[in-house]
Amino acid sequence: MINLKAINLHKIIMKLKDPFVTSSQTIQEKEILLIEVIDENNLQGWGEVVAFSSPWYTEETIQTAEHIIEDFLIPLLFNQSFSHPSEVANLFSIYQRNSMAKAGIEGAIWDLYAKQNSLPLSKVIGGVRKKIDVGVAIGIQPSIEKLIDLIKIYVDEGYKRVKIKIKPGYDIQVIDRIRSLFPNLALMVDANSAYSMKDLPLLKELDPYQLLMIEEPFKPNQFIELMHLQKEIETPICLDESIHSFEDVRLAHVLGSGKIINVKIGRVGGLTEAIKIHDYCLNNGISIWCGGMLETGIGRAHNIALASMENFTIPGDISASSKYWDEDIITPEVSVQHGQIQISSGYGIGYEVNRRRLDKYLLYTKFFKKTDI
Ligand code: MG
Image 1 (cartoon, rainbow, N blue to C red):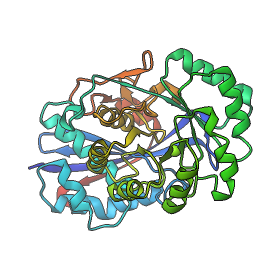
Image 2: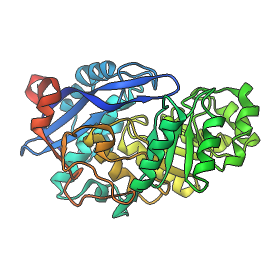
Image 3: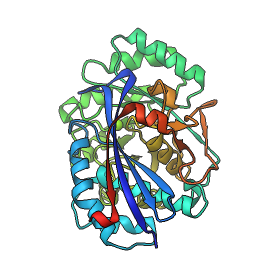
């Protein structure tokens, strides 16, 4: 049995080193909810809620997640018994969606469970890699020159794959320039839903550039339109915002709405669902990679563990802590050497939470004890 004695919700706010610009958003600061679960032996597990402050990416926000966790998920956990983290998703399934809220708590329980069993999280979930290849995601830049400078820096640092964000008016010309300078770069683009079927001629123009993929070209969940688009273009379509569950992956696969899946633990409701997606894709020859949500080291560490699984063959958006933050809240920070991250052999997520730094960015903590419920 996993006996939770207490759960603490820490709300923090951290400033990104540089604003991150997508086709519709500019993110400068990130509010983050960290979940600390504590068992009867005072072992702690940590999880991170990756929702943004506004509902532009999915319907969740950091505030809705706090409400769902506090008023529904914590009471449920304190009232139910369970012996393995993979049972938590089923417990939570009485409540609809709210995937990032669920994933934050489930992640903390996975970390706790791995620590209880004196194992790295990557081993607990069946990870097979000692190191993972990683890529970098670069937001929309004020000028192509600035973008080219950044790509040079990341290529020199050894990142194995570069992703750029695109939007109408900041696409072909930018890609053409990058390709002329970096003909062999593993390059992909992310549209964050900025196009529609009327842009088909332009999307066809991407084919000669040998992109690894185009991520989420249309509005989320337009599986039928994506099916038509994939028949018309050679560039593989990768689905991000459209995938909320294992069932979405199955739908996309059966329809042929894309060829690649970006797996994000928060978006699909937790590690248990992410593992299910991994296994399905492995068995059906679908390529996958691990996406990022501008996480602190805690969420980043969960992503690293996930990406150690067999079918994560494309480098994920799992950069060094220092790409985003002046200082991270874990020790050691996540570091990238020659485009690779070493899988920690430490127990659980394999990184310690740095309490002093956590306190520095802390807005407040809410404490829940089992007897309070
Ligand atoms: Mg994306």
